[in-house]
Image (cartoon, rainbow, N blue to C red; front, side, top):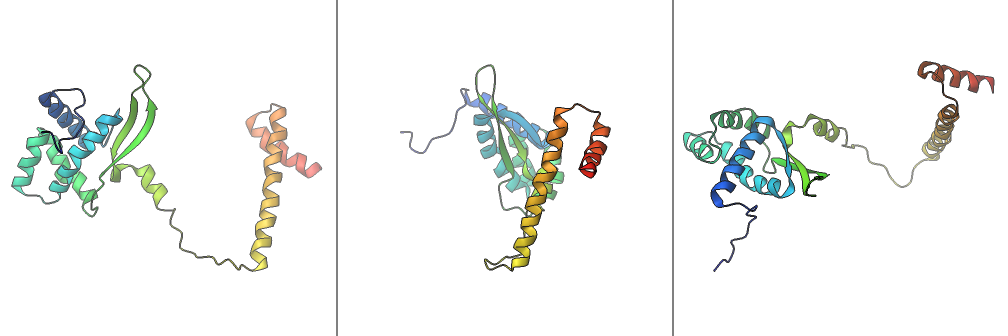
Length: 185
């Protein structure tokens, strides 16, 4: 019976599948981000995340177990060194899958799989998102009046570039001429 034996075989024999996942995991550790199909990325996530958890405890046994999966000395050095230095405090979820659309040839769903703590762009966006102030429903009239004046001032600024779009001008002159036009009116 096949009870509980459910995973994606990826259309390959066992040896080919293991070799492919080993190579993909090595590439992900060394390059921090790879592009692949969604099905392969999901299987790679299940393959790699237990290795990263094991690497949190740097023992000879854990290094040998990781080497049995990855079969690459450089990847082991990188995993137990730089990767673990960044994800040591994280309780799990070391990888992120970002869908990128469909491949032209066979319409396979493509994605980027990356190590979470190595994407500087996402880390920068995550930090300012925290909001520490709390606002009540009953606000003073001054704050709403200030917001209304900002709202009415914003469309006037947006309309000025639309008038400039009709007349093609040099990029440097358009900003100066827009100020002159508003001063003349």
